[in-house]
Length: 67
Image (cartoon, rainbow, N blue to C red):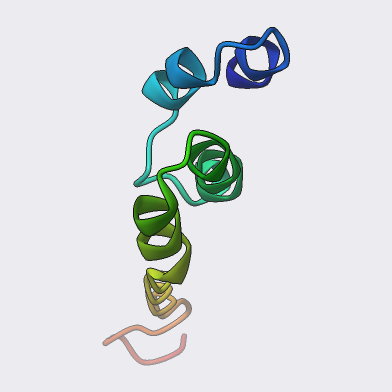
């Protein structure tokens, strides 16, 4: 939806739809912010590090002895 708004010449509305917290929105949001002249916001958004992935939960461990 945001892409359609941006293509229609309404980038400000497209920015309002995108969520900066979602990793899949960052690149599009950064491009739109640059287009609107909001360079400092775009740079800060794109430089924000990705969150570290959660460690995998152990599987197959048990307190019970086998058979």
